[in-house]
Length: 366
Picture 1 (tube, rainbow, N blue to C red):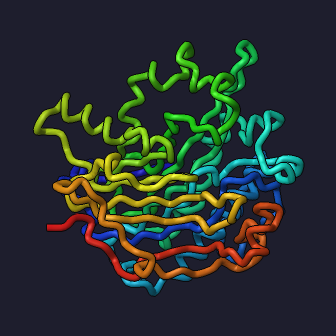
Picture 2: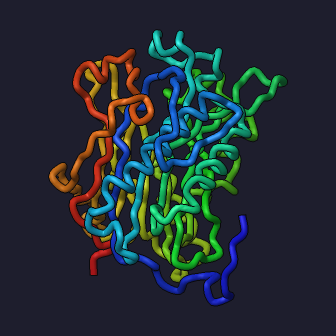
């Protein structure tokens, strides 16, 4: 990958965008689903990965992504260079499972609780970015590809070091600045649905170097400077634990009045809601969450939340469901996870698709 630019384009002195159009991928990710055959649809690059399960899920993700860009191409803001398009998938989107796990409805140690080898994180990120970077469909887009579960092999310890990594990519720009084109960001706080009991999880063992509490150098990992904006990204429990808020407090302590404010907060999750106490954006800015929770007790469709922060009242003014238009994906395995909950989700008439805002939103209120 080669990026060329003039020196004046290294950094932007003001935000590139003035408004945002949210696009949220509605797909359940809580329960294990086995590998299925997924074909690249017409016009969509074909993914090639060594792990066939990861390849299938990555191909479906790209099919959905390209379908979204084409289906909503006439939506207001899609072709506006001042509007940032934000596409988000939920946590656990890339998590493999055996047929036995899908039948049992839970992940097991036989697959390291749905994990791929650790190096798969980079292979997936490279493959996804390679598929979108040449397409003008994703000009002025940010894409959060949910998370990928992986494991660091270490036979010397009884614990598993499981990772839950968010992938965030930038599409084309009229001119690229010097920021990286994509990032991999680790979830800091491991929840009970991430894997085994905490006593067998290296990330939750305070005696290991894998513990977030013993690695203060990770405290600013959630902050990304793209397009003249400070963007924060959290994974599920990290939001409840105020990871971004603590990172911004650290910046203020170190930099004082020179610390920049957070312009946009994004949360990919599976069982989380936006909490005003965990919001860290500037007054009047936006926070967006895409969730993958669909519990087997009711198999409800996963939620999307977006709101504007009122710093004085410490409240998030949430947009209601009428703000979004919903379009269901084609009902084939190339687009939908048809075997979620052994097919119960689909049998109950629950839908998978994309929610898009009916209008663009100012990134900040004056």
